[in-house]
Figure 1 (cartoon, rainbow, N blue to C red):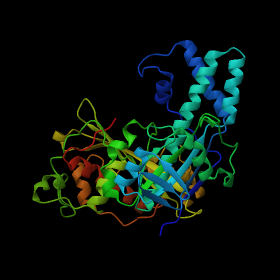
Figure 2 (cartoon, rainbow, N blue to C red):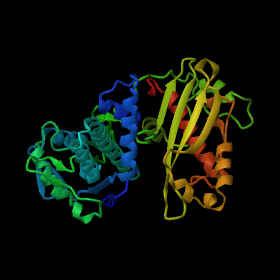
Figure 3 (tube, helix red, strand yellow):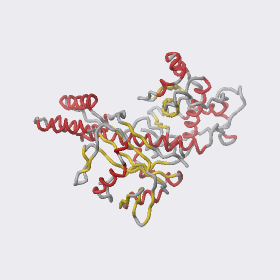
Length: 422
């Protein structure tokens, strides 16, 4: 039986994407901001970076029952047709209760700006608060997906009181059920008689969990991943919008020492043989891989690896792999590749080799450029030492991860209707 999840973060990192902030402001993506608007955006960001007190709390409910249109979570019953249908269709057996807030300080500052007769400053800061809440929900979803991936369950889209088919009056019941008193958070969260939250830049939500991964895949249309502002997410489930060309040559490994490109030339001899199961490759190609075709028909790909250090209590870490391939007609030759910690990652600083000599380890990681100048198909013939450790300290560990990244890319390009990127 999997352990129940509980997550309390009084100081979560908040990354508000420029595109999301502009969307909430009502500014078209390609429309230039006026000089005044640029100043207001910068001021809102600066103020919140100095004074904002966001927080995040999540806990897995101890029980979930679905009967007669009601969603019973532990001792509380909720009436939401939409939530009930999603949980039933996905075969959900549990739920995670989530509360996030941009903090009370932002609401107080916005009120002060209004009282001072500064409507522009008020509007830009208020809107920034909305963007913070969206970023916190995305961050919560990412952390839930990370936990779920390790426990062989899938996270369903969140739903909240006030959404269609869920009475906002249930905010108080959900807030009491979450039990924020057990968490040490900066500032509380109350519910007004109207059902509105105070601070108002806050959100309560329910994320369903299902062990039936295959059934969950049929619900990808309900997962707004293709609109999610969280960059570098390794758990994306919705399909990308623009199809990539198939990899014509999906070969079997050839003998060691075979001429360059021999794996691609031997493609027609049989199905590809990977070092991991195709089921894993299929899932990773959807969740961890982004690809796009450039105007010159070359392919750019990004693969995200999430792991943990082998010491220091298993600190989580994330690395991004970037690969550029020549066009299909040129055999998808690997033109460039690189690996570096994902933006915002700090887990890599806890690796033993980093603690001993950070410059040497990061230089070694940057210097790893396997199969550069060779067709992507040659990854199937690449004989690597087994180094499945989560860290990057040893060369074998780094080769193992590079092999996974390239095999996922090879698999994705070999499929009909391979997903495109942004």
